[in-house]
Amino acid sequence: MYLFLCEDNIDGIFTGVYDAWASRYGHNNVSLTTCPPHNYTLFHEYISVQTDFEKSAKVARTLLNRMGEETYTEVCQAASALEDTSHKKQVMNKADALYKTIVLALSLPDSSKVLNYLGEPYVNRVFHLSRSTGNEAHHLLGFLRFQELENGLLFAQIHPKNDVLPFLGEHFSDRLPQENFMIYDATRKQAVLHPKGQGFFITDTQDLDHEMLHRFSPEELEYQKLWCGFFDSIAIEARINPKLQNQNILKRFQQDVIEFARSSNNNILKQ
Image 1 (cartoon, rainbow, N blue to C red):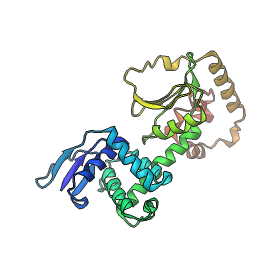
Image 2: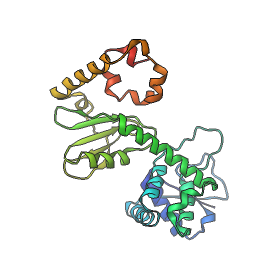
Image 3: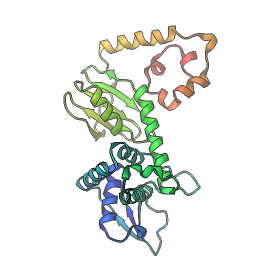
């Protein structure tokens, strides 16, 4: 058995798919993983995969052409999902589930139907991973708040479980094409940057000036004050329902929502 060790991101996994397929070892003799094994076994050969953006792009083009945009997006969402290794119960590795799903998809007359094969454990795993990322991205599209910094940049901070930056970047680049904006993933220390009139890109934030992120424009501070005042004024004290509120907007999202972060009415907005 040949075990390909790849990075835990879309490009890393797609590179692993490319290398595993090109190895000609046979699909039944190949596995992918993003997590180095705790105990190496004698009968496995471990192959380290170096992320290659050209190889990843070739895999992406093939999948997009064969699967169609909708199924391809779901596969990308699954590749961006958090690989949860905390469960004691053994769960199929994310990268391996994706590899086997891709192999099945490319063997079908209509590759776009691959996620209908939920009886296959690896397809079922990809389906649930994709739904996890898709649901979180959908929530953030509604809860994400941009704040104008003093330099005119629109800035938003998030703490997602899954790597949703590529999906948020694509959405807001389409919605705000003439704005300079940044979406900062504080969990992974990465950010989407979108220069006005151009496409977006994702970068690490090692040199990010965190002091700058708290220097808001005068107009932004005034709007925050007005909005939070409105939010407080419409609250009805007799109908406070923290449990329902936490169902509508999860606590892990609340730290990045201006209504919760800056409102003066702690009894209504904070637990």
